[in-house]
Image (cartoon, rainbow, N blue to C red):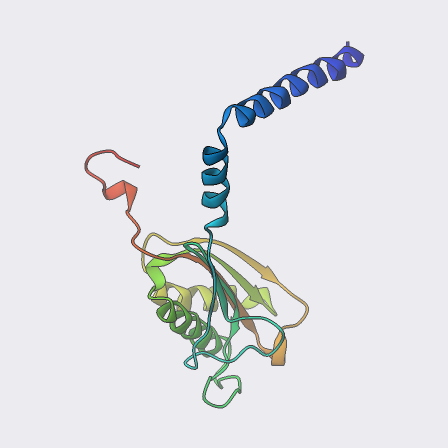
Length: 181
């Protein structure tokens, strides 16, 4: 029985492939050109601000592709002097999130546009302290998040936070009274 499964899947797969090719062939040259132009219309923009630390390597503070912004990991570095802020992990987390906020502002966004964060910590024992600070910046409808302990962070930082945000207006589906998504 298992030996018959592969040939059956291959037959179905080739039918799907032929159907896709037939659909593509049925498009006129203008339609194919319009479809290609629509796919090529994505815009990539580098986001940079002096109000957040300059990149300390070959990367951008953020990259905006269409409406999705990818914000590079931010540590608790003071942009005015390039040094980690004193005071421990809470102060570092606060500064890292302020840095994220300045990058968001540079793209006309704010924390409500953030849909995903990744938190890197030198020690998972700092998890509760980082969460305490995190909740000061994300008060409700929290973004999705992953948190990891890593062996080391740049400049001896104890926490680094990266984010993904969607630029432009966002509609909250749970507050949509018409039931639209």
